[in-house]
Amino acid sequence: MSQPTDFDPQEPIQPHPEEESFSDQAAQYEFNAHQNSIIRAMAVKMKYVGFIYVFAGGLMALVSVVAMFLKPWFGLFYLCVFTPQLLIGIWNIRAANSFGFVVTTAGNDIQHLMNAMVSLRKLYTLNFWVMSLALTLVVVGIAAGIFFWSSGSIHISIK
Image (cartoon, rainbow, N blue to C red; front, top):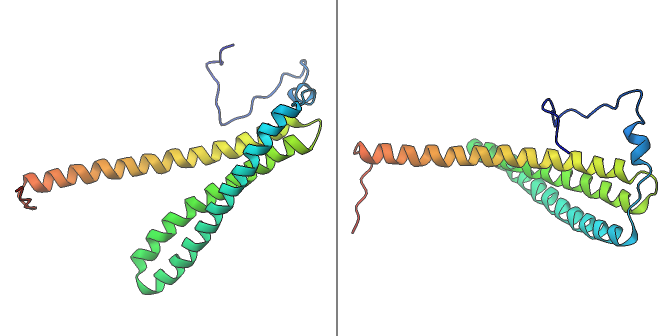
């Protein structure tokens, strides 16, 4: 089955009124015990990772507040670091909770699975933009280093 050409992954697909609704179809599926055990193990690990990210983000927030008074530039740096960590932790915990609901409830497995997917989409969208920014900064840094080295502003001696 192929995706329609006008598919936008940011917008949910709306069912046609004359067709059976997606939620009616989704309510009919239930994962078996083996599948639930796999989902449960993943949810536990995701929640653990999420709590570590939230804890690390909280520590970074404290460092950021202290650094704002001592060295404002360092405070700004730590502010930029703790925010994504906190969001990654929160979205991991939300996804883990939704995966946990898949295991512990009956009748809404697909809806809980889709809620987990929304949190994971947010998490990976953030990762995409953070990695894109980091790669851009690395490329700009390398280009600036080459430019300054070739113009004679930076002297590097190779022995």
